[in-house]
Amino acid sequence: MMEAQQLDRMFTALADAGRRGMVERLSLGPATVKELAGPANMGLPSALKHLRVLEDGGIVVSRKVGRIRTYTMQPAAFAAIDDWVRKRQTAMNQAFDRLIEAMKEIPEEQDRS
Amino acid sequence: MMEAQQLDRMFTALADAGRRGMVERLSLGPATVKELAGPANMGLPSALKHLRVLEDGGIVVSRKVGRIRTYTMQPAAFAAIDDWVRKRQTAMNQAFDRLIEAMKEIPEEQDRS
Image (cartoon, rainbow over all chains, first blue to last red; front, top):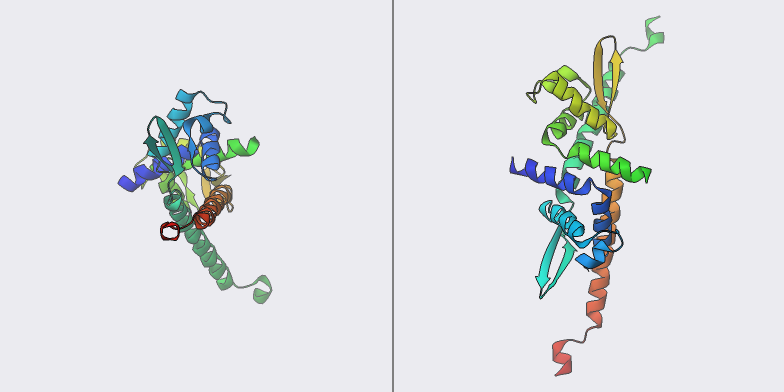
């Protein structure tokens, strides 16, 4: 149940182009709120709000030194999403393989004539 | 820009545990609305609404034969998400490698004493 909530928050965090832009920037290295707000043409309050959503989603972490808050990627940022997607893809491949096997069992048209 | 909107819709589609449950079911093979609503304890109108969000996100496709609508996974369902996540992970790894290289340039404590 807890994991479901965490996945909800992760996917929600990434469901916004502005927030994904911040993640794209942070994937290159740490940045301050100001550095993240600038390229996105965001006000600082708006940037902080988006960064909080990313932090709640476990995508980024922040640290305040003096008056400056710096954001970095959470090293395992995408692990849960990767894991969930991979499980679905494995299931899809297995379902496809079963379909192919089932089709082999069907006698071919010409064999019946 | 179009791609950004599509990614928004994909991540939004997966940001709900009920919808992810439907995707988990559909990864095993096609299913009707009724089959998808049942295990989720959803009413049909609610199930249809969620399925529409998944369809808008390019995760599932539907086909109506007679009066029965059947849903299947979109074969390339996760390709765009996979691609976006992988690019970020590559960037993170490269940033980490640069950090390691930069640290090698710093003279060690004992060398300076």
